[in-house]
Image 1: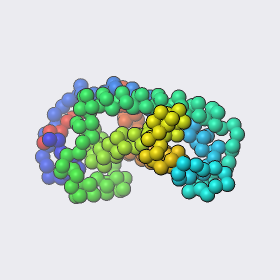
Image 2 (image 1 turned 45 degrees about the vertical axis):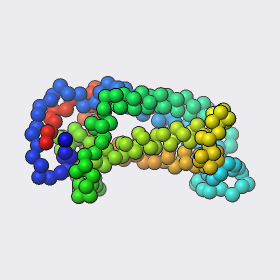
Image 3 (image 1 turned 180 degrees about the vertical axis):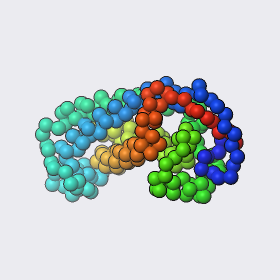
Image 4 (image 1 turned 90 degrees about the vertical axis):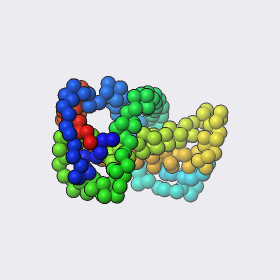
Length: 242
């Protein structure tokens, strides 16, 4: 089993694999489609939120009722919901369908098991703390290290793909009257429509935080090289074998 590049004292043997794509065509295509649709969701989501920048818990919530969180945003009750909801609906389905295609492809090709499933040794506290220290210290990573995912990246991607995005989809469907009329359990399990809206907002914030950290890590690894690899596929110069 391939060990993490952050584990010291383990001898590795580099094998030249210059023709090995760093990212498959499916990964590259769905990555950019999801990126564009996510920005559409972000812009339209902000527009929708400005129409009523308050969060509640339970089934109902409106002006004049106690709120759970008052966001420091101005009320813009008109002119936002129309185009915002339309763009949000379109972007959401593009993102969901592309994401499903990516997940199915990743499961069939064992992309998740091969690239995102951490080795047992990598889950040790010493390994995790070493990777964390490297990230917090903003140390420049080597080219060989940039060719693989460390344990923090692996765990983060797994949480984003299999926890945050499903939560976003679930809570988004729970806010749709048409969907809820057919599947009322979607919203009752969350405690109400306003609860679904609040959870949706928190999950969206976590995804934005992930995006910011993701871009920062790309810059740390070499922005132009990383982006080029996600566009053209690139190639892995070496592959370490334990």
